[in-house]
Length: 191
Image (cartoon, rainbow, N blue to C red):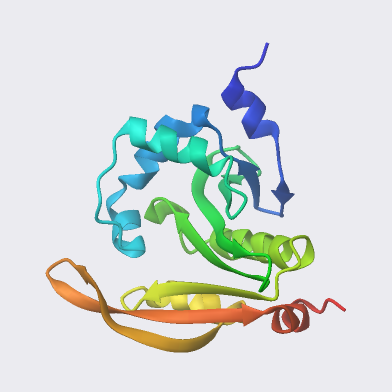
């Protein structure tokens, strides 16, 4: 009989060439807890708060019942190794918009196209399944690589929240970006 973790890893909600996105469950608490404490991931996401495993378990449990959030784990197709998470959050069905966020844990998995593919899978889901019109994100000014990826995917800069984050002894700007459904479809050649 398969364990719950093995059962979850076999479920592929969205699948690409290199990565697939799968549901998160309370059995992923230990994994998610460890990902949240990776130093580079914390820096790139601006995470300052510490969490207990119980808080993480409660967070995951709450998100599974939250209709305004789609929280998924990013796993490698070849090995089923979980390398990060991605979420559409603050989904507003009336105005057809949401916020997207992504975290790839560990620098060993960055720069290999995994994040771009995961973002495309989630954008396709947001625009093609959830019928969203606008998806936005924030990226900190010291994360130029991510900003470049977002621009390549079709996100446009809308503005800058000056000195919005205090991290590592100094203030950093938060860059606001978004993509509209028509822009996404044009980039992906979808009619």
